[in-house]
Length: 280
Image 1 (cartoon, rainbow, N blue to C red):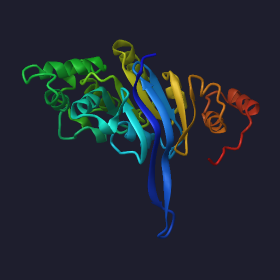
Image 2 (image 1 turned 30 degrees about the vertical axis):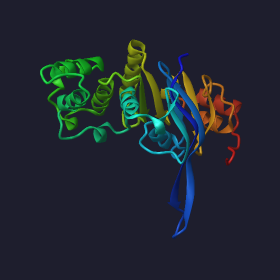
Image 3 (image 1 turned 30 degrees about the horizontal axis):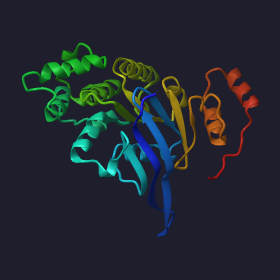
Image 4 (image 1 turned 180 degrees about the vertical axis):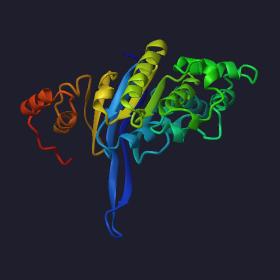
């Protein structure tokens, strides 16, 4: 495996919240997290809502500053990167968010959304940008591209909007995409199509993915490694984390996953009795 493109070392992020009345309590959303992400692999980060997954994603994207710890980009501390290295990071590490409609400018047509990125980063000229945008749409399965270039986001389905968001990220030729709950607002058939698209893009370009999700079944089908978050900490990680869980919390997550066959569900419950999840 190649050297990590992105790493976290003892990463910590806390927030103050009201615990009723005027009292405040500190919630440690990310608690001493160590993590490595390599090019060409898919790392899934799973856990229930409030476990710290999205907070970790924002730290990895540089959208928030950690309270303590380090984020390393190709071995360099993110906080000390030169302007040139920060620009390289912004191109190599892209994001795809949960709600594609909210991440796309509703006033811009699809062509203009892609053109803005390409022209800003000098990836195309005004005379070639339309063809370049069409090529990106074709690469993510929006064909024929001419049917989509002139549309506004509200004229697209949820799955089509997410494909446009992926095309926008792919226009920069990134080496890593951090996708925060990219499937949660889509129906099952569209989820399957997007998972197949992510796998195809990875095989074709060597792209890496960090997929944040609470859907264990979806991510297990594409992930090379899985990291399980609980109360801000990664309590278990590895290639077999969901198939051979060791931590009580991971076992509870797996046992809570719905199985279409009721006989298999009863058998799993019988063979894997519930265990108490530690409070910390």
